[in-house]
Image (cartoon, rainbow, N blue to C red; front, side):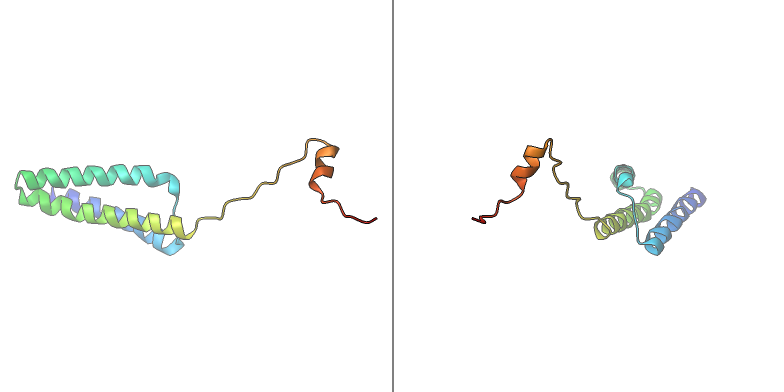
Length: 107
C-alpha cells in the first residue's frame, strides 16, 4: 500500500512542474480535476470515519496535491484568459450600410 501511494503521489509532480514551467493550463480539464478532488476527499473522509491512520496518511497528501493542482490550473486559466472577441454586425444590404454611416449636414 505504501509503495502504491508513493507512486501515485509521484504522478502529480510532472503535471505540477509542466503547469508551473509553461504557466499555461487548459480549462477543459477542470471537470476531471474536480472529480479527482471529490474522490480524494471522499476517500480521506472514509479514512477519518474509520479512524484508520494508514489510510489517512495515504489520502491526506493526495488531497493536498489535488487541491494544489486544481488551484494552479485555475490560476493559470485566469491569468492567460483571452479578452472576448468583438464581432461587428455585417450589413445585409447596401441600404443597411448607408443607415450605419452618419450623415453630414453639408448644405
